[in-house]
Length: 108
Image 1: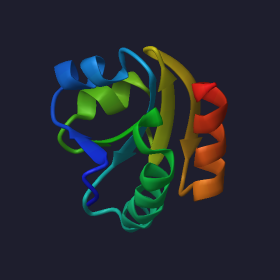
Image 2: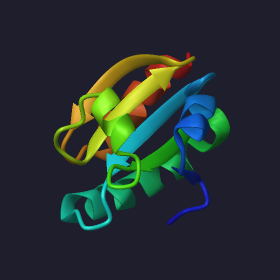
Image 3: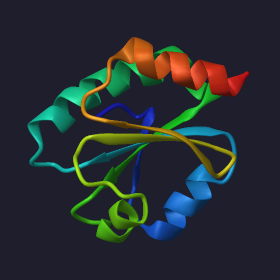
């Protein structure tokens, strides 16, 4: 996995990461095939956006409480936050152009 993608390991870390700026969170599981496909796409997005936004991953098996809090029923689920507020949510594999577009619109 790219160093540009942060792996979140606790609820406290999650809250700290989404607190400011534009953050795309990927709710995933290690056993999920589509999640592995999404990771490859997220690596491309991370390279394209650089430090303008944060891309992070939450393992739903390890942090089930976060998945429940945000109503994650299917994975991958991607949620975009801006300054701690939920902006939009996607379910299923999303293409790089879609993700880059929504991130870019929220950076401006």
